[in-house]
Image (cartoon, rainbow, N blue to C red; front, side, top):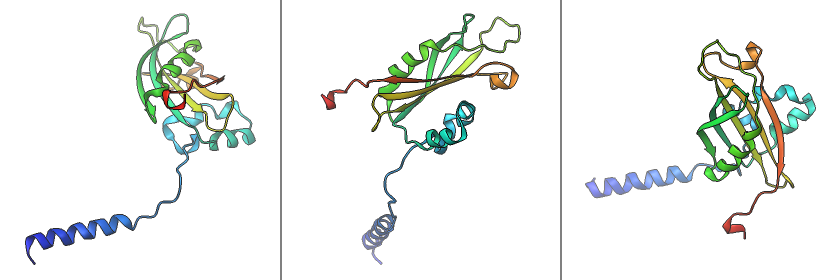
Length: 167
């Protein structure tokens, strides 16, 4: 077989193979389907029935960031670890996190413990919109709740400001 015909046959085979995949419809992103969102941290705040509903409700986006737990228990934001589906909710996530207070486990050092903050946004078909905000201590001691520290959890309601494409 001539080289150009061989490449054409290979290209045709790859194209046909790619067309054989079956799309199963829209993908819904939920707490149950995303291990990064640490659903075990907030499960205890809900009854079993309500938890199943919250766990399986599709979210529109989330932001995970790290920060430093200060002496007054507030969190100074550090760097954003992950933003899904894009960075459009980063400022809102940092704003919702301003009121977080954690009682950290300290080892007597002068080094401030670290925190990880999760903000999950629910906007589609919900008015007003909701944001689940939860945080925990991270670092050398692991999850703070296992050592007597606290986990912060709150649900914020808000009205999303339309972007330029929605005005």
